[in-house]
Image (cartoon, rainbow, N blue to C red):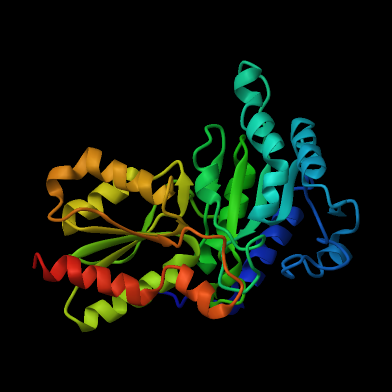
Length: 333
């Protein structure tokens, strides 16, 4: 008889908070810094209550200067601390691009292996909340281009809860992209949930007819599309990439070898996207396994609109995934 797994009802936001709290309880070197993470409780309420629990030395409100506090995080990591730096949105991370790309990602190499940067940077990404063009883009694919960092995209409660501790154990910089549309996502999480590995993609739904490859905020839409496709007699396999750098190409190729069709769903722009990288990997490693060309479903190539109907039209949606899969499978069934 197997023991019953105890679960708790929680949200993505609360899972991230629990991960931060546990890390700070376990390791006194861990601290959180960023804009409004203290008294305000975080712009997305992720750090609410942590200032009262851990005090201002470990929950540090910073000035509105991403370059300054990311640089301070790099210095703290060099000094033996384990900083978690929160950047409000991925768009604002561009103000710290020099620190992330020219310093955090390169110091190990430029020091001849003498200095690691065990820095974790969390930031909100993605659209769907009517926050317009300066708060809504998905730029994680840009960072996946950069050697020297890892790029994580937790899409489930388990990954929201478990990726942080694993990232904090990494000797090199890790960027965690939390999709803003997921913070209110509610579900059951094992009461003893803890660290998860970050090296592999996950099959979230097995299938035989087409591989739907996605990550982050698009996972829910993709699973919804797979359910609709099942009603039409099409068996869709859903791959959650989980990590964009390093990319688990073996899992992608394994899935495509089974289904012989691939659709990549990516909230980033199509041009120069992570979807383009995945498509190239499939063409290089599994070309003769394909029955039809790889398809990509990405955001419209415009600054993200503010009106809801235009924002919805600019983003990948389940109906487009279903239509694309039906056309792909139906014409070569």
